[in-house]
Length: 433
Length: 112
Image (cartoon, rainbow over all chains, first blue to last red):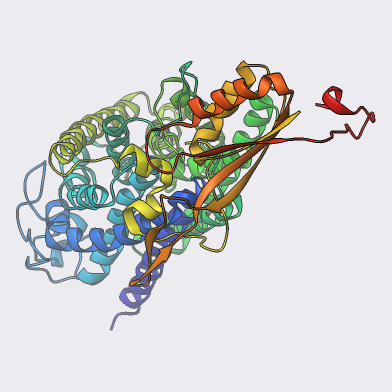
């Protein structure tokens, strides 16, 4: 067997395993940022969501996303990887129905696994934003619909050879495809659910509902950062020494700059270097470099990460102001970070870094063309995912219901939904809602 | 002086505190407790096996007030803590024999 195919396959699978590991990161960040009485519920959601995503993406998601079809969704080889395929053959040698991803020379199931862990990530982003009040079953149903239909359709537009790909919209590893999609779906859910009891006082002001374990949140953030070394460099889907080295550096630079910028800004605005803001700043930097990690220089990645870190701090404060209750900051991190990162490609991309792809962005003499394409993609994905998700959430609300009872929310979802508790040997009593 | 102890639902603490502040109560002690009355416990599950948890989480507050304030404090607690559901808790009032403010040595009602 060709050594290149073997090396590429090992790289893609190892990177996929790292992305899989991000499920742990999300679980730890989200449970840390929420209250002890809801811990079993949070970790249950973060655990089962990958199982749900696996089935959903296998049954129809993959086919809709990568099957040959029209500009909007795949129509061939739709169900259960059933289409013809002679991977790892590439380019002219490829004969099959998944031609949009035939540029990578790895076996079909390696492509599937790598794309599956991305689909799972989009679904798990929703979990944190809707935490502490959503019914378990309703979350499971929504996750299935998201990964089976919503994510793959917008994914097809961008990575499946659809209309945004044709247009010249670039999202290397998924600032829009994965992160914004998850955040728009989450925002729709949060609006349908409403804020947690006690989040906004009688005077309408946002109240603090502190998370119960900052050690867990920090561990989770580090696991996510680590997982991103698969998420971004792995998206080369080939063991290309120059590219993966470049991407791992831009990725980590953006995280570092995001963490520092968020810390400095929080220190200035709030008077203290809030660890919650440091963590979300790093994550915001990672989300925002995801689109451009292969197209921008390490220097630019520092600037992108720093701006993203600042956006996250202001975004979290803004969402509180407009009464959108996102317990973990997922909408700010993945939504605002994802939008900014996608637009940043239009500003900071340099043709010399990945010749024949994006061309130059606005700041490197490429004019407004690329930025305009990026803007169209951001708006189209936002409108589509938010609109469809809103309909799905409302349908769930009208049928099986979406929110637990007030009494259950006050007692905690651990007992109410699962009959379990996370810390049975401690008295952990919430004295607010 | 009277000592008032109340066992309430945890999520009522914030409202009880506000109600007491509103009638001029200067401080209190609160702690997390477990207990049960007529409400009894509930069932939990651990790896498939059911078990009964008799003691439910509650919050206990304690405060000492002047004799003439006691009735108003009792009423304020009852009103703020009531949800109308079983398990709302109870209020107990006792005579308090002495009080000393450690920092200054003041005694009696001045120490409150």
